[in-house]
Image 1 (cartoon, one colour):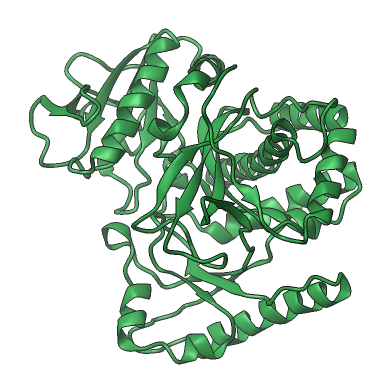
Image 2 (image 1 turned 180 degrees about the horizontal axis):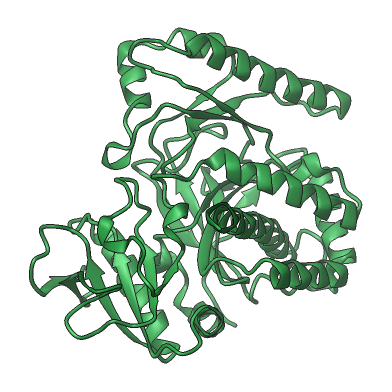
Length: 431
């Protein structure tokens, strides 16, 4: 497949462990794919997800899993057939009788990049053979509202309405309702106890979900997988500990947060020392719920937490749509040593159902190898998934493009499996 992708260089002397990891994946690819099939039969995958990865050369690990992905417009159009086929499978499994899908988007109608994402998602589902309408829960959307997008396309928003136990727009009330709204502002009453299939379920919105729960499931998944392919699970697992309650404005809980930071730093330093990794440990402190790169900081010692100034403390209390920040996730920092045109980059892998359908590199010219790249000033470069990201090329070296992307797809699917177990746990808790 011809393409004009740019591929970042892995700029580190610590490539050996990653090459060994990729070689393990290649040598065990048949067993890996069989294992994934069994796992997703037992625990069906979410409708969709995106996973942020960090590649340190000695470690390849997920640092965030988004169950309401909002970057479909950043995927290369050459790979659209993969997304369409995966969508057909996902909808058939979730709601086999439906002929249509209702998408419920985020409320920010002025974010053109986000709306281009909704438009692309709509096109993918339509190409899969389903009628699609957009039902908005934004109170400002009171009538059919066309929005002209920078791409030249027009997205039509309609106010969401409820009739009995179903939601829809006008006369369109399909079996399948797809959330592309992470519910940071809470669980909308209009969606409670509907009889339609809601993807993902309300319990997975940020009003009730914690990242710690996800990474607890991920650690279990990674441990089982590591036994299968005979690797150290640390190579694909970031240590993640919840800490709270914390109030950054009045300083409540900061001493405990500093102790937790110190613990993760010490554990990382011990591993680095044992395995001759010549890097300085760091920790990412971020809100245990929420997204959009808000309420997050990179720290290299516990004193960084105790010595925050007022502006920094206020920044750590700000989350999307006023979501309360009272619990923090203290996570082992994973360097990103991939660079494109001297700017740091990190891969983001997109999946529909249990299929990798593409991805992109998040790139930031103003950040360092220890920073959070999901921040203003970032841009995107489509990832060179020449295949589906699931098919390795045994005839090439472990770090050849198809095999590096295969490794990305493997680790991303581990995070997807952890998300599937999250959903299962939430359902079991309600039963």
